[in-house]
Image: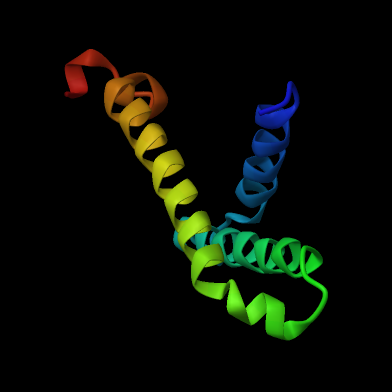
Length: 96
């Protein structure tokens, strides 16, 4: 990770949060963000190949890579939220 990794991630989160309103739920914003990440990563993958056949030949390996990376990041963030739940969810100690 480079020095701007978390800044870029926070910018994406901020953009997703701006879409949440009375008509667009957190779940819908999350689905859009997840879809956009998959679409972007498909493009990133395509940029590494010379043709569709090469890309198709590495499809399963590519999926495994991105799923593994997502799982590690999700586990890290879930653990962080579990450890800091009251603070992150702005709960007072008396509410727990």
